[in-house]
Structures are given as structure tokens and as C-alpha cells.
Length: 423
Ligand code: SF4
Ligand code: SF4
Image (cartoon, rainbow, N blue to C red):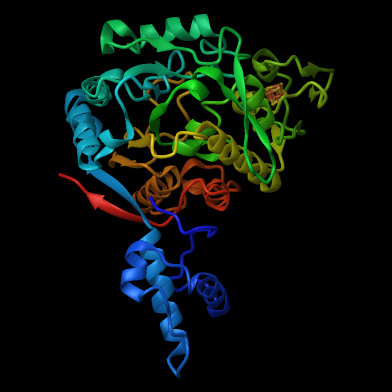
């Protein structure tokens, strides 16, 4: 996408007050810029009785000019893995995404291999066509995902790589290796300077920071803390080192409420030994807690409490800022796919087989704009489900727009998109 210098993307269709559109328009009325300049000859006459109409038309032109293209193809599990792969490849070609990759690029193919026991992750055969395209371009692609904070088979590089191979994310199946980019223990990281609101430096997995391009394959799901797990979360949380992840999660302050039955599930799952059980209930030591939300997920009695309003917003802003760090130096060298297939309430980190979908399968979206592709995905899932995502996944207080809006604000992309349907 192209950017107007110094401007944030704006939506002007209807829901903004006129004085806001005026100030935006005034800022750029003498800014010459390609197609826009041709249309408006680089100048706009804002005088006359139709003053407001002119401004609104002009702003609409800007919004259209700045919208990112998001490519969409219908698809579902019932197509079978081979056809899903073929459809993803069709999108790759339709979007002209080959232009983002160069011969000999080390290209990180960011995937989620699915926790042991999970059966709804996007399986390797569904992405084969994308890898074939990268190989055809003679890049050096590698499958990759960072280790998780929570206790499970993705907690360190060795178990993660073994699990990846068991699930088919390996050289034997896809012709390219699986490499854990943040080292054995999640500590191999590159500090990346960013101009964020919460962070001026973020910690990204070294091998992702050092790769020249990224092809991100995200599985759109709900999420118990961020509401939406899609491209931004894949880039922000999924590409951060352990320290980077902990910084993002540090916003979450959890406590144990009166519904606690002392069952001990949270104690068993806490990766930070932050939970103790006294005679009455469990207790969280806030000095030890890393905010991973594992206890929240493990508790079957809804006894783990969190002030979602504020915590959710800070977490999502942190995710967006880490995504900015992940893409540093990779502008125009990254492509983002969202698979809207098996859209489950919770993410692929859950060791749960056959999680039911919250909506029927929709298809695949792809774009070079990580914000646009997530906004389009969110719109489609909510349209399909007839409800806000937070309602669909049963975490009513969450709001996925925090990450989208903040990502826009820090210059990661725009939520304005043009959907291009592909057959
Ligand atoms: S899992 Fe829930 S109910 Fe069980 S001990 Fe922990 S907080 Fe209490
Ligand atoms: S107490 Fe803190 S570190 Fe332990 S599982 Fe809960 S959120 Fe994670």
C-alpha cells in the first residue's frame, strides 16, 4: 500500500464529525500524491457554498486511495486439504505476492503447528501450495514458530520441533525444515527499536528478525485474552521471544475469586510457580505471575478473575507494537494469510480435539497489509455469526478493535480495505 506522508489512515464514511474530516483534509490539501494529485490536481478549492460537500468528497477519495486490497477466496474443510492448498495458491497469484519475495531470501513461513491433542489447526497440506510458490521463486523458506510460555509440547525448541514433525510441519512432508526461531529456551532474541506508545524497543525471535521476508499463515480463532487471534497476534505474540511475550502478557493481572474449589488445575498449569493452594482457595503471587492466562484457561469453575476492560486494551496494544517490531525492515516483503476455516472459540494452543466452530467455514483472505487482512476477517466472521466476536466466543467483555485501532495508529496498516473476490 502507499502512504501519505505523516498521515494516519482515516475512515470518513458517515461516522465521523465534519470538523474531524476538515482537519484531516486541511492537513493534506497541498500534498501532491500520485493518483490523488491527478484527480484533484494537487489542490482543492474548499471555498464556496458546497464547502462541506467538497471536503467530504475529497476525504472519501483519500480513504479510497488509502484502502488496502484484501484478496478472498471461498473455502471450507469439506473441500479437502488439497483443494484448500490450491485455493491459497490461487490467492497468492491473484495478489501478485511473488513481488514480495526475492531469490535467496531467507523467508520465515510463520505457522502454528497446533498443540498436542488439538485437531483444528491448519494442517500442512493446506499450505503446501504457498510453499511451492516460494520454492519456485527460489527463496529459502523455513517453517517457523516460537516456543510458548505455557506448559505443553511447545514450551521449548526440542519438544516443539518434535511435535511439529508429528503434525507434519517438517522437511519430510513439506520439503522445507521447521526451525524454532527463538532458540532452545526462547531466549534467542533481537531487540528491535520501534516508535510505539508503550514500547520503544521490543524483543523478537532472532531468526525471524534476521530473515528477509515473511509469509504469515494465521488461523483465525477467538482468544481468551486478545479476543481475536489472527495475523496481528501471529506477528506480535507468535514472533516474540520469551521476554517479548512476557512483556505483552505483563498487562494481565489475574486473581482468584470465591468460586475456587481448590481443584488444583491452575496450580498444575502455571509455568511460573506463581500459584499456591491454601486451606480455602488458590492464590496468585503477583510478583511471580507472568500474565500468561494459563490458569484462566485451566480453571473449570470460572474462579480466575481479570479486569478485562483495561488489561485487554494494554495487551492488544502490546501485541500490535510487537507486530510492528516483527515487520521492521520487511515492509513490502511480507504477505499475510488468514484461514477462516474451523474458526474455533479458542486458539490452537488448546489441547482440545475437535473444538466446534463458532461459525461455518468461510475461506481464505490474503493481503500485504496485516491490519486490513485482520479487519476483513473479523468483519466476515461477525457477519457470518450474526454477532460480535466477543459474544460468539463467550468472552463478552473483550474487544478485538483495540489491536486493530492501535496497529493503525502506529502505522502498521489500515483497517480500510477493498475486498477482491477471487474464484
Ligand atoms: S483451577 Fe480454578 S477452581 Fe481449581 S484451584 Fe485453580 S482457581 Fe481454584
Ligand atoms: S498465575 Fe500468572 S503465571 Fe501462573 S498461570 Fe496464571 S497468569 Fe500464568
